[in-house]
Image (cartoon, rainbow over all chains, first blue to last red; front, side, top):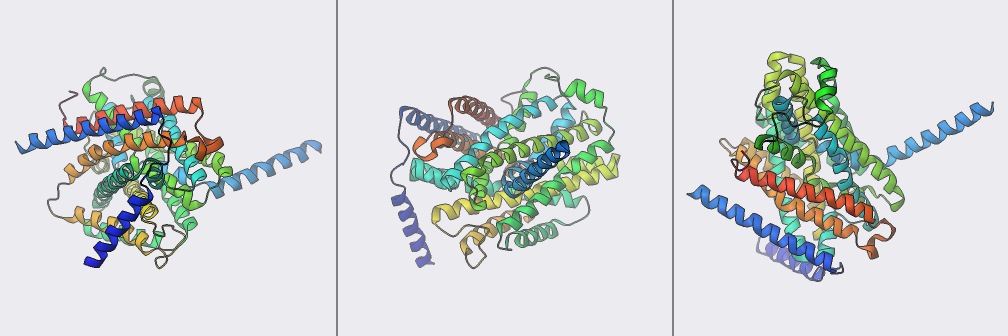
Length: 57
Length: 422
């Protein structure tokens, strides 16, 4: 079990290393799109947290 | 004589084109018809029952929307020979890659649960207990994938796609008024005015037509099938045919429930089938068979989309052309998702309604991201070369993506806050 987990984490480390740098050229349009996505996802997470708090109350 | 020889030559040429298409056909039709999964059937059945034929025109608009989004995956898959998950990792780095992969796993697993809910509800109408349905489906899906050939899997999937057409004779059996369909269905209108409830139904129809798993599935299927750049025109035609077919089936479902259950509030396709059993036994049976088939087709595709994506990233062998010994992790992840999601349905008192709603919420966190990544990857000229998006494709594709993102997000939000649009 421990060895399997170790192998898994090593594999994840390899994947992170392999895809460390984005290959796509970071033009202004790409940067703007990714920034929009970050804000969009942040907004959704805030909504989900708010809903979760409402459910708890 | 000259006329006959020309005719013969033309017929031969056409037959060769049909033969070539039959070789290429598959990913586009399978993904689009599988889009009419258990959740989709419920949405269309509820739309017909609530608004009759009045929203058929809106379904027709979804043909180009689905086509423009899905054809991009054909080009990207055929040119890069990579699935969308791998393309996102490679293009945008590990952070966005992990986000997409983990989100895809979660939303696919939850979608699988909803497919099992649909299948058990459909066979429950015939008195089949849920445990038997789940066991039977898992065994059937094992037989389908374990033959070790993509070609065989695809042809079996196409057979289930053909069974999805069962709604067409079903619609003829309820004797709908063709003049009413043409009069009310084809002219854009908003029955009862544009209110919150109608908006919810429009959003639900869009949400069910474009799902995140479809993007990942079709691109991986294009790669697994071994499609090349020269096959792209046929791949696009396949996608267009699939888009039209999925909407035609949706329209016939709307006609069935719009004719027989008009004005009724329907919560699930299983409930619609049970209602129909009381009015017309055969139509009810068709509805139930169609629902089971939709759930099965959805389960086949959704579970494969996850396994392909996992295999691409972890570097495991991940092709249906490899047997279980050659690709053990690919099949292990496939069966793990399948069995665990099937077991959830069998847990007494499991929050199945909550899971069904939760799928929509999680899907809106992935769909916009996947669509934005897709458009950006299609604009990567060094990789895509001549198959890069043109200005026109960016304009139409971009517009469709913005509309889908806005409406599916509003749909997800309305699921979380049901009173928001009422």
